[in-house]
Image (cartoon, rainbow, N blue to C red; front, side, top):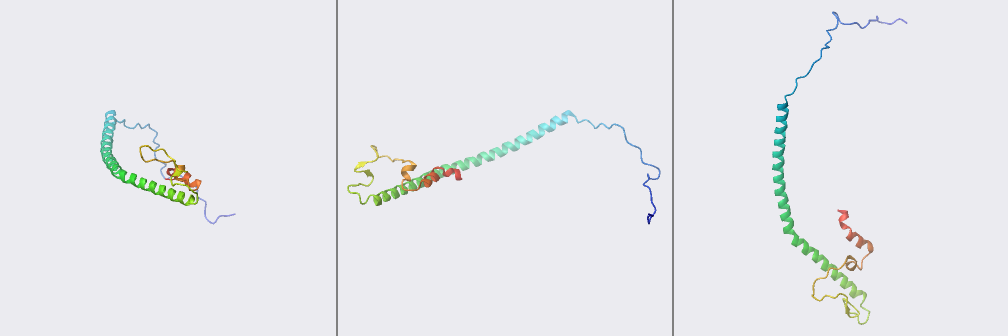
Length: 149
């Protein structure tokens, strides 16, 4: 089993390797005043940036709060419109269901008012009363609507 080329052994370079550096090297110590000074500088810069951003955020929060206050009456009016529309649907449904019952007055139970309202104030009914003519899962979905958002 002769090889085609001659065998050469891996040898050190001519003149040998350089000297081995075995001496202990101690890095320069950082001055404590420099460390403390840089800490103070970075902390001050961060605090200035934080206060600047906080002022901007307060202004933004004030603007958003003012917008919410301005829109709130419109939101409440829309909620009341929806509630009145639902009352009308319930009244129409009651009229349709009880049209063949003799002596039935709309909004009463055989002539007696269902609710005692001496001051003629608006009555806020429960969800079950509002959604009396709907499926049970519609009431459930309306009651837990915020969980979906």
